Length: 413
Image (cartoon, rainbow, N blue to C red; front, side):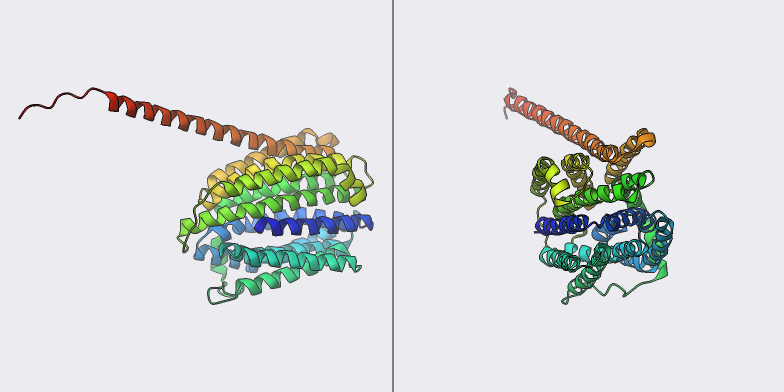
């Protein structure tokens, strides 16, 4: 259910991008891509890994995250939105579109907490309904003639209000988001969040670095076209990410003894990786049609960009599955090592192309980084499985030899 809702939401996002591109709103897409990429850095520097801590932490940690988000992060993001809009307005980006895109980020950062409450409560049906209906509202507004960024902002506001109402519903529901806030708790969140800060920073760098780097060397039209494809790629990641949050939530509930727990199996990861592989194959085959006929992108190489990003999807799923499982178990260090490794490879790829960076190189960097780290994880898992099997075989042989060894006759009485 979680993956299906995210898939529908991703399709609606892709539909909005396609409609906007065909309507010539590449400037809106470029403003949204640049603002979200830049504002993500601001949010990470303040909030770090608080979103993951909110899902996997105890009640005290969660209260600290809410205080930090509302009392410190939101004001800082508002100021950063105005500064970023001023910096990019002189480069051909629309000021209203930039500010609206910043509003989308701020509203979604608050709604994310309430969505996490629903996930932690294992209320995936309610979370799915909130996600899909508010995306549909934004889609309808876009068709009615509202600019892309404003339609997304209205949808984000509806998403926040809906998740707030659902999360607080019932006797066992969460308290209102604004209750129990304090500055000492907000400051304490920085210390509690330290272990996940590096993970979140590296993960954000991996997802946004190529867009930021490209915006420094290319114009709004190229950035808008590339941003549309990156948004599709991130929407596809969100589909598999939603499915992977289910086993993470189960592991978290088991670790904190939160009522009845379910056995954790690998079925969710296997299904997510299989679905990612199937989706990637479909996108790779249909990329020329999607880029030109559906999205209406006039750059011939855009199909190649989309194919490279789609090729990265199965490897991205493997990496996220490993990281989220470790976070659910409380092993934040192992998850951080994976995220940092991907970020390091991305950095190297962008630096190699610094003098001639283009969209094709940026997309290829993402694909190579995810594939390289996923290959290492799979090799390590295979090696551990081999050693475990070898150790079990040795124990079995030793037990058999001990059983077959002649026993000395018992002494007579």
